[in-house]
Image 1 (spheres, rainbow, N blue to C red):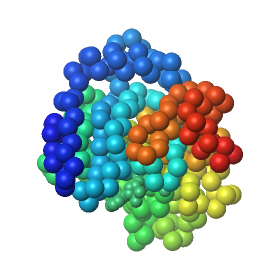
Image 2: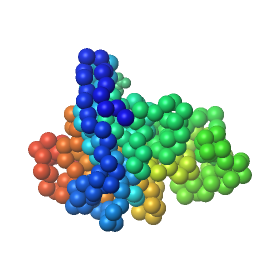
Image 3: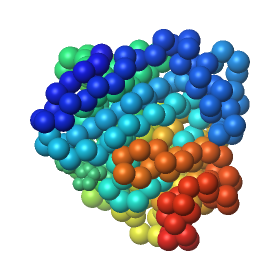
Image 4: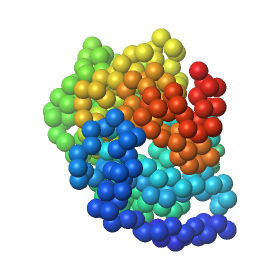
Length: 288
Ligand SMILES: Nc1ncnc2c1ncn2[C@@H]1O[C@H](COP(=O)(O)OP(=O)(O)OP(=O)(O)O)[C@@H](O)[C@H]1O
Ligand SMILES: [Mg+2]
């Protein structure tokens, strides 16, 4: 869609999105050795990012040329120093930010360059869990998990309620459904936020440092819920986190970003134990 665009004084020129079959073939050849995902011949990635660029205020170039494919059911963990563009990338994927140029495709449908109405429709496929939970404080846990289902998916109350109870039970909060966020711990609030996202059955679930705002003893419960979701479901997840244990055990692939590009990606054990890029090695050394 965004072949050529002027943003402030920066002129951005990127090629059109690739043909779906050709892109899938290239992505398969590239990613098969980089991920624990069980690749199926002929499979297409669920998320395809080509030449994604994001510039703020006409000159702050935050995403330079991000290229990334994510496969159905894959757990991709994104690492990188502060300011490297991790949140901006996630926010572009669910269209909270409008990319300056480049292409994002979900199941081979381009989602960039759409009208506001279309954006609302597309966003149903992209769940997001934020560092700061973003729950409605005046609604109960149950109501928080129901509201997107009734308002956005137009589900009936009973159906939405049943799904909300199921998802709240899955995150260990079956006995807290009538509590409001101020009556819940941070870890419990984050688990409500995860239940809310899962209840929408998105194609992809995006997590932006979901445990960074939590006290250490609450981190474990949230990670356990995410681990369950990753290992026992077929959810596709892109997780920005500094939790190295999670990345190593649960990640199918680790992606290291710096300066608005993907610097290195690969199997967790490869990236952690044998980083190829000096910056990756430095970063991993600094957080050990
Ligand atoms: N709305 C905005 N306007 C201007 N600059 C922005 C905006 N949002 C982000 N930035 C800048 O983009 C850069 C990348 O920010 P981003 O939040 O994506 O980084 P990050 O990798 O998520 O960092 P952190 O680990 O600290 O969360 C930063 O320099 C930030 O100041
Ligand atoms: Mg961030």
